[in-house]
Length: 163
Image (cartoon, rainbow, N blue to C red):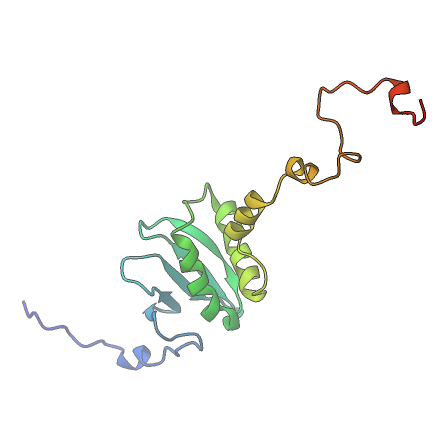
């Protein structure tokens, strides 16, 4: 058996795969119309497959080969979306189903389109640190503050001035 690799029977087909506009550092051609983005070896990766309509279908896979997010994207968004998806992969637990993976993809795609919008994890963190209504009550003046729960109201004559 010859240990050397035999040349392809169709070498011209291999050179005909056009490189997409988003291909750059971290991207490699996998096969056919599929490209893979992986910026760190043995970490999460994005598989981008060209669709018939010119858009791309992206799947985010964890380092443990679990599907974390999936969905379609226009060619112009793939280059920014793939790094954003892989950056979120370490924080995301495997979803409970296709709906969860599609929701995560959609949230990330919207955040990439609108850079000023918070990521879902940042929104949860900010919501957890917002002061509660109870702490807002303590900043009111004593005359306008609501009585604490369980407090009895003052007798009617006690609040009248001049008595």
